[in-house]
Length: 189
Image 1 (cartoon, rainbow, N blue to C red):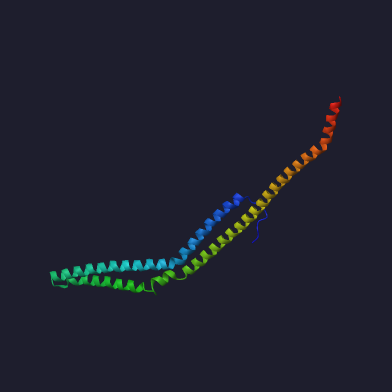
Image 2 (tube, one colour):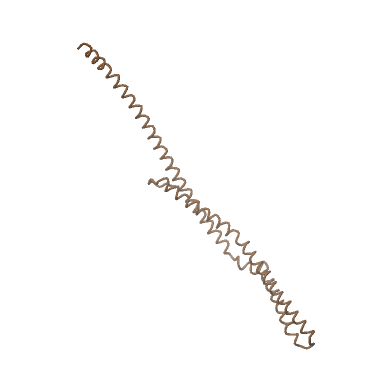
């Protein structure tokens, strides 16, 4: 993990870190969704199978009811057509239910796509995680450098203040004999 040699401002690094963390969280959510999509897809297929089976069963029951009414109305072959339509709807229901069994629609929908999507989501999440780690390392180095610079500046100010106080004390000591001599001279005048 090589750090950039150029100096980057702390606020820029923090801004970049927030963006990268946002991207990382999005990648993590996408990975979770992609990882669970086969189960969601299977649930959707199962629900659609039940819905289609229920609809065809309702149509079959309607056709059988119509056939029964026609059969009772006049006992002729005219009731045979709705009966055949009802039997056709039952056949459709059976085909849909059998087709949706684990070897049917679910297998066709899952056919290798989910593994590729999960792998791609893993790669994107890992790249986002690397970007976050790099930015955190850069931010740590920048904060450490700024902290050292602030400490040096603070210590330099303290040394400067002490040197100024020492200089004033030395000047006062050096000037004291001159002041004393000036005081003596002014008394004798």
